[in-house]
Image 1 (tube, one colour):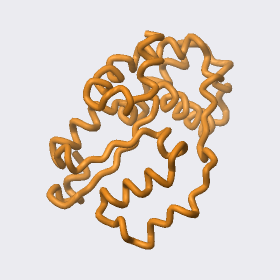
Image 2 (image 1 turned 90 degrees about the horizontal axis):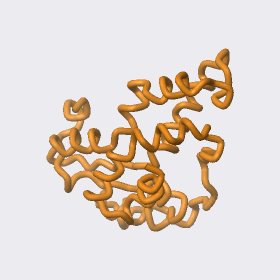
Image 3 (image 1 turned 90 degrees about the vertical axis):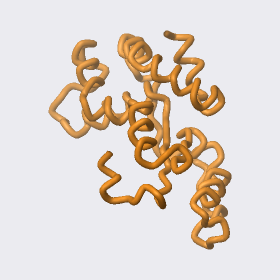
Length: 168
């Protein structure tokens, strides 16, 4: 784990945000596509090309939550890692911020001002625009990891898990 060289394991508190892996992969693919503005838009690409983009090593590495958690836990331990679900940040930002402040030992800090948090979703990705063949592939690709997360964290901590399992 690269972080271990910079952050002492005994005093480090990590916050790990997980997101629907299908939506996360599609969002990353759109970002990569925008960076290469000479390429076709995602909806005009063949399924093989879309799958190849979804399987980019950096995209897979950032979406494989079970691998990331296993690596971090081997260095920092489970108790030093707080796992949040991305949707919590948009649904209940004040509660999440209060929980984070308590987790970090800064509950009484003026830095954590929950009154000025916007309620609107900041970084929305339209998953309905995802080509159906690519969606089927991504559900197939990430369902085993989602099942592992649900066993470990519980189904309420992984709210998108049920829909992914149903599609699988």
